[in-house]
Picture 1 (cartoon, helix red, strand yellow):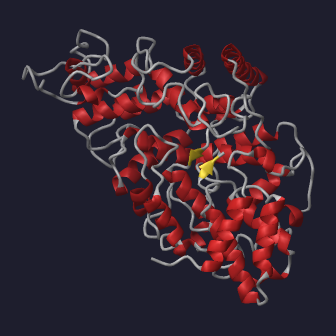
Picture 2 (cartoon, one colour):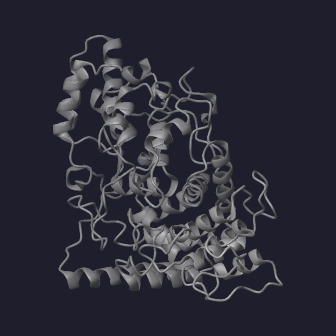
Picture 3 (cartoon, one colour):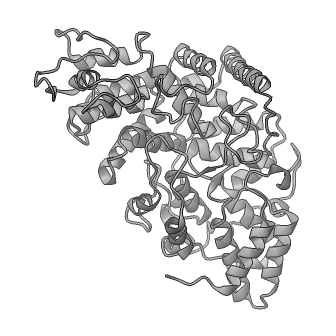
Length: 538
C-alpha cells in the first residue's frame, strides 16, 4: 500500500480542524441571490479557460468525455400549464403544513434553511446521482432569478442523467443480485423507460409482462431470466414495498404474509408447487384468499391489478421510495418493508402523497419536482442527527452510484455509462467499485463505511487512472486564493471558509518551484476528495 506522505498528513490535520461539519451551513459562505462575482473570483476560471476541467488541453481527459445530449422531458412536462403548476404548489404547501403541525405537536424546531450551495449539491446528487460541476455551480449562484431553484430542478429532471440514475436505482431495487453485463441490461432498460417518460404504472406493467429471455424486450417488457419465486420477491419488493420472500419457507416473522401468500403470488410468474402441500398453486393477489380467473393469462391480470384501486400497496410504496430518494429515509423506513409491523412516521402524509401520485397519472417527475419545492426539502442538516419527522435533512453517505459518479466528476474522468456507472474496461470498473461500496437493498443512500473502504479510497490505487494532471495554465493565470477556491468548488461544491483558505495557502506557499506548486494543488484536491464532506450528501 502507498504510504501517506508526511506533508499530506500534516495538511489533512490542518484542514480537518478548519473544515466545518458537513451540515454546518452557518460556516459555509454563500452568495446573495443575484450577486454576480467575476468568474475568476467565483471559481478561479476565466471565461474560456478550461484548465480546471482539462477540456481543450491535449491529453487532459479521454475523448469519450463528450456528454450525450439530454433526453427531452416528456411533452406533458414541457411548457407546463398554470393549472399543473398550481397543483404542484398546493401539494407542496400541504406537505409543509402537515409537517409543521406534527413538529408543533411534538415541540420540534426545524433546522434553518440550507444555503444555495448546499441545495445545489443535494439536488444534483438526489436527481442525477453526482455532484455539480464547477460551471454548473457558477451558473446557479450567479442566477438572479427568484425561481432559480425550480429551474435547476427542471433542468435536472429533463436530463439524460436523471433517467440513467433512476435506471441504476431501480435495478438495485428490483434485481440487486444481478451484476455485470446482466445488471447493466436491467439498468439500461429502466433508464429507457424513465427517459421516454413512460408512466410509472406502465413501467410496472412492462416488468410483469416481460418474457423470460434475458437481454430481449417483449413488447416493451423487461426480459430477464428469473425463476417464479425470484420474480415474486423482486416485484413485491420494488413495486409493492413488501418483503414477501421471507414467507417462502414459513410465515413471515413480523409481517402478515404466509406461505400461501408467497406461493400464490409466485404462481403469477410460472408453475409452482407448494412446498408443504405438494399441490400445484393457483395464482392469487396478495391479501386475497381466492385464485384469479383461470381463463385470462395470469400475468395480464397481475399487471392490471398492480396500479388498480384494489391494490393498497403500489402507490404508497412508490411515493415512499421517491420520498426516501430525496429525504434520505422513507416515511416508512426501510422503503421496501411496508406493513403493520413498521408504521409510517406520518401516516396522513403518506396517504396524501399516494393520492397525489395516482391522480396525476403516475408521473414520478411530478412527485420529485413537487417534493423539491417543499420547505422541508430546503432545510439544512442542523446538528446532523437523524430526525424521523423530517425537521432537518440527514447527513447521508453517498450511495455507490453517487460516490462513483462524483469521483468521476471530481477527476474529470470518462463519462459514465447509461446505467449510471462508468463504462467497463476503464479503471476502476463499476464491478470493482461496487464490490467495495455495495449497499443493501432498501438502503439507497447508505454504504457500510469503514476502514477497508477508506484505505482503498485513500490509497489512490483505485482512482489513479482518473487523476487529472494540473497544467501550467492553471498556475500561470490566477491568484492562489482563486485556484484554491476552484478546487473547493470542484469537490465539496462551495468556496472555502477563511480558516480553510489560510491552511491551503500555507501549504501552497511552502513551494517555490512550478512542479512543487502543481503537486501541492494536486495534494489539496486529493485531500478534499478524501474528506468526510465529499463523501456525504448535505
